[in-house]
Image (cartoon, rainbow, N blue to C red; front, top):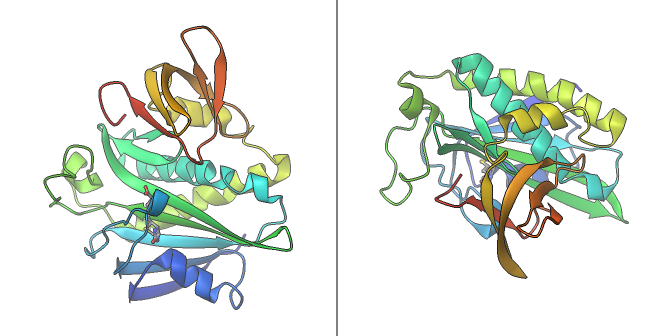
Amino acid sequence: MKYTFIYKGETDSTNLEAGRLADEVSHGTVIVAERQTAGRGRRGRSWLSESGENLYFSLLLKPDFAPEQASMLTLVMAQAVAEGIDSMCGCKCQIKWPNDIVLHGKKVCGILTEMQLEAGRIKHVIVGVGINVNQMEFAAEGLAYAGSLRRELGVEVDKQKILVEILERFKGLYQAFCQEGSLKSIQKAYEDKLANYGKEVKVLDPKGTYQGVALGINDKGELLVRRADGTVEEVYAGEVSVRGLWGYV
Ligand code: BTN
């Protein structure tokens, strides 16, 4: 994959911008913005993006695979982000399934994957990544679970270098993912980073909340959760949230 970069000082949302440009630009286009006025998070939430200190980017892909596989790209990107941050910052961040990157128990990155279909096939997929890089001030209500690389590590971090590092890693992981059509090749590495691994979790399923132990992921990226009666659930990320018993992770 060859990356092409489009830089914006300000935009509403790099995901929206990527969607607007999708027909004119090629597979591998990366839209990067200093600030977003309407940054979007998962489940219709917003993603505060006023500060020029953070990294906001969206990668536009035009893959050949089936629509069912697109959601797995979120985990591929989560792995690339986690590895990229570790190698740049010399730290050891974790992934809260499916796609939050956590450092010292604080969320430092979120990923929003959106797909456009045409006649039942993927027209494009947009993988949007927001990383709190150098932001020091957080609203009081966010402080309990949100953080930034600088806040956690005590040093300023180069946004541009992190972006390059992440995209370099994504390229390799994406190639393996496309060859296999599953997460088989990253499953182990992902589980090594999984903050929930072997822990008691609460699964907030719209059909009913339950508790269990997170055993890892399968090659589709579903979280395997063993319930008290021994049955193992394969939890699909779509509508479901997972929490630690005592807090966010
Ligand atoms: C989450 O809710 O955790 C996902 C947040 C994703 C935010 C990023 S910032 C860049 C891209 N553009 C958006 O509007 N959202 C994503």
